[in-house]
Structure formats: structure tokens, C-alpha cells
Image (cartoon, rainbow, N blue to C red; front, side, top):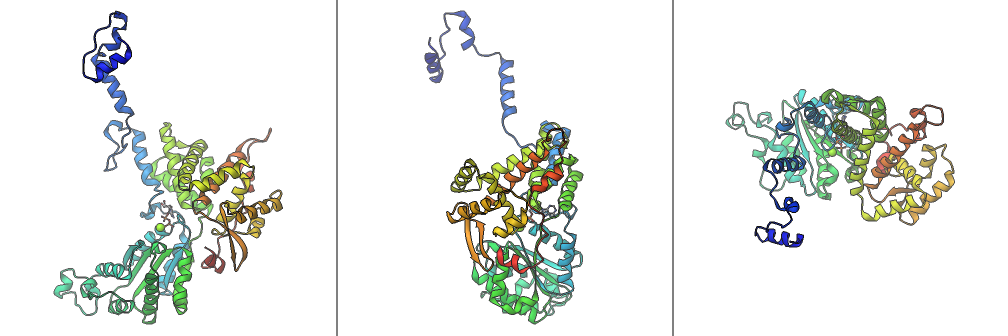
Length: 487
Ligand SMILES: Nc1ncnc2c1ncn2[C@@H]1O[C@H](COP(=O)(O)OP(=O)(O)O)[C@@H](O)[C@H]1O
Ligand SMILES: [Mg+2]
């Protein structure tokens, strides 16, 4: 019987005839039971499974040390979630102190702005805990695209017990039954004046209303109402303050609505983390997970992260898992390199095909290094950069004039960049947000690894060679005009 016939016989459920040649008997004979079980077992071992249970214990079949370490590592580095446990919160002592002082001493409303992943939500969580320790009522709202003033402040009111309303004694029935300010709201849409009137009745406590992801809300009405509310609350010294986290554009827009509220607002750009803060982020993760990072591996993370806690957390997470997969509890430079590759794949998938093509073409035509310079310049200047920034950041770069001409050429042909003619003159910005982190990480990985290669008989001196990276610039002053206007 030909193999086709035998196959057909099987697929129609007929038992194939025994072959005349006894040697080929094996082809049709059912494999011995034990072997089939082993095959099934092998297959089921290959089948992807979750490695830990929903309760965070390692799955029973892999109850070993590395499985436990994997579980711990996942809670040590949480790149897709903000920090909520203050023990995992690295650095930012000055930032936090400044925020607390402005809320407590100056009684102003706070706006925190900065790029995605810089740590705004994590800061808000830690600030919330500090305020709650001081018995503030803190209501956290994450704004959505369709958030409305009415919806948000009804939710806020529902979190404030009637107990703190001047008109209710703690022994009043409503207060005792756990009533909230929301019980006092009319059915008609809420206005800033109405909300301020209600908050004016608060006594014996202070309220912080945190509006996170403020940039996500698209409604201009919402922003105007928030500006009105800030004015109302400030004019009447009401015991409620707003903490708004978002991007810089929101700050200028809010103030545009009512310029007089400028003096009631403390605006702060959340700065990049310093190298030592990123170091302590990695150290915190080491303590929690039991995974250790070789010195060079941490240096690599610090270099590529370039002050972004998101990058640092993502790379530490991937690198830690790579080490555990390799049966080690220490993370090496190679693990970090693997983590960077993984991050690059993730980031690349967030870029449009059109931009991917432009990047590949630029790399092929020998100007790959220009992409890295553009990314560095943009990253160090909140997205907007010009030829002066290139000079300032790369003072010793060869062929600077050619390089700047290439950047101008890119922008004028709308390749990856767009031209900005603003108050600072002619500048550039990446047309697509996701391109910047991708190009930066690509260039940083290359630079770090090249700097590690030993040159002739000289041992690798990474710290010196890495100095080819952009000259470190200090973070712009909080609320600095240039930064505020630019992002
Ligand atoms: N101070 C910090 N210490 C440790 N990790 C941090 C810190 N700030 C942020 N992260 C990490 O960085 C990532 C981005 O933080 P997040 O607060 O969500 O940023 P943003 O709100 O600005 O987008 C998260 O993975 C978070 O765990
Ligand atoms: Mg956030």
C-alpha cells in the first residue's frame, strides 16, 4: 500500500491492511503504550503554560527555586504598572518633598507633567500615601477619553463621608449610615461653582483630588471646567486641592483659560531620574527578587534607560527573566543585551510600517548614526530639538555640519521628522512618538556594547567610551518656560 492509501485509509477510519513486507510493519503498528504516553508527555511539556498560579505561587509542576524567583522578579520590576508600594519607589526624594511642601505650605494646586513612563503615576501614588498618613482624604481619578466634569466629581463626592460636612454631626443618621457628599448633589449636571460650594462646607479634613492621565481626556469643556474650579477653590480658600498629572500642553491650556489661576498653581516637570536613582531602582528589585545584577549589567541598564524608570524597569524585568531561564540568579551584560533586543522588538511593533521602512532605508544608506543623534537630541530636549541642541549635546562629534544637513534633509522631506517653526526658531520633532524610544535604545545598545570591546591590548573602559553619549544635561528647572512651551 502506498503511503497515500494508508493515509486515506486512516482518515476514513478504516484499518489499513497489514503490509506484505513485515519490515515495514512498524509504520502501521500502534506504538507501544508506554512510548505513546511518553510522546504525549513530551508534547504536553512543550505546550505553553502559565508558570505561576493566580495566587502568585509557582505552578505545582515547577515548584523549584527558579520558579519562586520568577514570581518574585515579576513583583520586583513592573514595567507595565506604576509603583504602588513605597518600598519599591526609588529616588525622587527632592521631587516628593517639593510636592508635599507646595500642597502643605503654599496650599496651591499641583500640576505634574512629563513624558510617558517618566513616573508621574508612581509619584502620585506615593504622594497619596503620604497625604493619607496625614489624614487627608485623597480621591484618585484616572481620566479617560470621554471623562466629563459631572461624572468625575460625582465619583469624587461619593468618596467623601458626610461626616466631614459642616451641616452634619457625626451622630446624624445619614452620617452614621455612611452617607457621602454625593447624596447632596442635584440631578442636574454639576458645575464648578456647585462643586466648590459643596467643598466649601468641608470641615475637619482636607481633600486632595488627583486627576491622573489628564492629557487623555479630549473634551475642552472638561479642561475649562477644571480651570474654573481651581479659580473657585482658590478664591475661597476651600480645603480641597487638585493634583493633576499629564503632559505639558495641558498646563499651558489650563492657564490659557484663566490666566489669573497661574499664581494658584505649582507646575512641575517630573525630571529624568539620575543615574544613582536608576541604580537604586535596580537594587530595590534585587532585594525583592533575590536576583543579583552584575555591575556591568546595571551600568548597561542605567545607560540605556537614560533616566527613564520605565525603560529601567522593562530592561531589568526582561534581563532578570533571561538569567533565570538560563538557570542563573545573576544577571549578566548578555542578559541585558537580550532584554534590549526584546524591548526593541516590542517598540518596533508600535511603529507604523511607513516609519519602519524609513528607518531601514536610512540605515541602509549609511546614516544610521544620524538616527541615533536625532533620538539623543530629542530625548534630552523633551522631544523638540534644533541644531544648537545637537552642538551642545555632541560637541566632539565628527562632521557636525554634514550631520546637521542630513537632519534638515530628513525633516524637509518629512522622513521621520517634522519641522517646527516656533518661538525658539527652526526646530524638529519626531512625527511619530514611538520612533524616538526605539531609535534611542537601538543607538544606546550599540554604543554601550562597542565601548566594551577591548581595543588592541587596552582593557575595555566602558565609562570613558560611553562618554561619546550626549553630554549629560541637568533637568530643566521645574516649570521652566522652555520646557513648558515645548512639549
Ligand atoms: N520612582 C520609581 N521607582 C521605581 N520604579 C518607578 C519609579 N517611577 C516609575 N517607575 C516605574 O516606571 C514605569 C512608569 O511609571 P509610571 O508612574 O506609570 O509613569 P507615567 O505615569 O509617567 O507614565 C512603571 O513601570 C513604574 O513601575
Ligand atoms: Mg501614568
